[in-house]
Length: 345
Image (cartoon, rainbow, N blue to C red; front, side):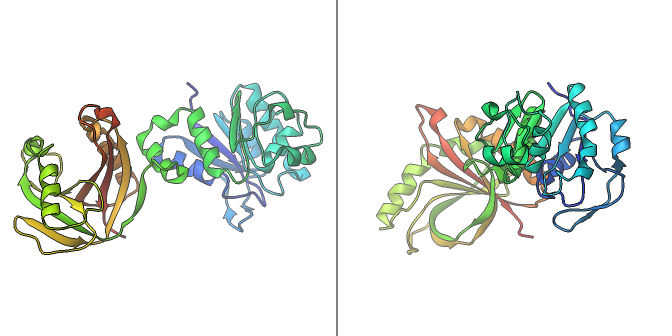
């Protein structure tokens, strides 16, 4: 496994500030990796977004450092002659079998030096790369992907900030870090990762229980049938699957909490006790989908809660589980949407 203790980021006038942003934020916020910025002379530079950056070191200092990851952002000015001074550090990094990450126009900088001729790589576009780096001869190794890794070289197109970060984290096996992995999921937009949002209000028919965790099993496979039967008897039109709403549940086995079990319906109607039919308020939450046996729900909750805490969000003590699919004969097929309530900032 590749060790990552230090990440050096080259900053220069006009560099594309968004391109390394996600990578370095994740490294600094969720790992022990030291992120060090450096410029040619150690003086402040102005990014392409007009942000003044005071680097921590100069190129001369970086040449003497032990660098696990050298990150070169792109930008329209990277190919200017003054920035050719970075090339000895790049060659030194590769000679020491250390990682190099280049994005956008920075790929053209290293392509012009023949560095990409024999390794898997990507860039903004193969034809653009040939135009920007006339000496480039690596088209047979070009990948039509947002990001790519070949040997110790990680490359990405300028619009692939997220894929670039993911490729780097994957290269260094950092996605085992639950907080980092959880945080990154918000940007990957895979459709199955965690999401922060507000669930709109909707009519809900349910029954309320005061119960402990130890007593939950007595309700499985019993209450759902009852809820469906009573909803039909009340002439309610059911519009979704069974949901369990927890209030004040913290995982303590013998602590009593409130549990509401019910189904979404299309309209509110008067219903007999012990049932309630009302419009639920908007629910601010972090949600994710759990696939598989319910015995492993605790693992998913643990990851979700760790991520919520890492993001500095405050939980409300209200949680919901929506059972999208449940199969008691084949529990591995179960699909459960978990929603953990958070306080709106």
